[in-house]
Image (cartoon, rainbow, N blue to C red; front, side, top):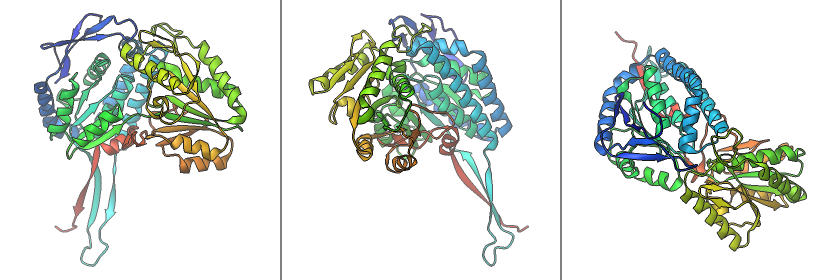
Length: 481
C-alpha cells in the first residue's frame, strides 16, 4: 500500500486493494495538506464484505488457539518493527503530536500481546450433571465460541489502538471483523489491516472499509448477518446506532466529561498540577477521558489553580511533527471553532477565563476557566478540546455530587490520602472506573474500560471484549453407549 502524500489507496476486501470508485481526500489537521486519497467503499462493497465474513466463520472458529495466539504475536512484532511508520501515519492523519503517536503504537503492541495471551487462555468448564436420580454418568462441558461477524466502528483520535481494541479481541475469539475507520484516519487502519493479513489471519475474515456514515448505519441496521456491532464515538451517534441495530449485540464506548477531585490532604500539588495539565491538554484534549472538570478543596484551590496555569503556559503548542510539541491541532478548524464558541458562551454566562482561549485555524491554546456552572456546555457536554474548568468546594460530599452532576460516567480521578474518602467515592461516584492517586485520563489497555449513563454499554479491555464477542455453548454427555 502506498502511503506517500497524494497517493490513492483502496480499501481492504479479501486481501485486495480496490481503487475503483470515488476518491476521498484525507487532509492533515495541522496544515490541511493532502495526506492521500482513499477510495470510498459502497453498500455493494459492504454486502460483499459481510458475505465473505459469514463464509469464513467456520474457518475462524476452527483456528486452534495456538494459531490465533501466533497471529496476534506476529502483529505485535510487526508493530514494533514498524513503529515509526505507524507513528508518522498517526501524526499525518490525526494531528497527534509525534511523541504521543509513538506511545499509541506502544499501547497497540500491548493490546495485541495481551490478546495473544487471552487467546491461549480462552477455555471453559466442566459441570457435573449427575445430581438427581436417573442421571448417573451425565456431565457437561461449557466452552465459549465466537458470535460471528463483528462490525467495528472506530474514531479518529486513536486511529491505531482503538482499532486494535476491536480487532485483537475478535481474532482471539475467532470472529471475522469488518472495520469502518473514521473518515479522517483511514490509512492507519488500512496499514494495520495489511499487517494482520500478513500475520496469517484469513483474508476473507477481515475488511477495512471507508464507508460513509449513512452506509455504516444502514449496514448496522439492515444486515442481520452481522452479530455484534462495536462502536466507539459520540453518545448521540452510539445510542442512535443501538436503537436501530435490531437483535445484534451492541458494544458502545462513548463520551465523557471526566472529573478530578483534589482534596486538601494531597501534599504533592506540583505533581498533581502537572498531571492535570497534561491530562487536559495533551492532544488538544481529544480523548473521552481527558480531564474536563476539576473540583479542588477551597483551602488549596488558589495554589492548585495557579500551578496549573503556570504549567499550561509552558506547554509547546503547534506542529505535531515537532518532537517538542505537546498540544497539536484539533481534528479540523470547524471543531476548533465549536470549542471556541463554547468557551465564549460560558464567559458570557459568567465564567471567568483564566488562561488561553486563543484560536488560529485548528489550533486552540490551552484554556482554563473557573466560575463555571451546570447549564454551561463546558460543564455539561463533552468538549473534546483543550479546555479545563477548575472549581473550589468546601465539603467532600459536595465534590462527589458535583462530579456526579453529569449525564456521562466514564472515569473519575481522586487525589486524597484518606481511605474512608476513597471508599466513599468508590461507592458513590457513578463511573466505570475510579482512578485514585492520578487523573481520570489514566488507562492501561488490558483493564476493563467503559462507562455508565450516556458513556456507554458493555466493556472493552481485551478479556472483557472477548467475553462480549463470544457466547457460551453447552455440551451434555449422557454416559450411555
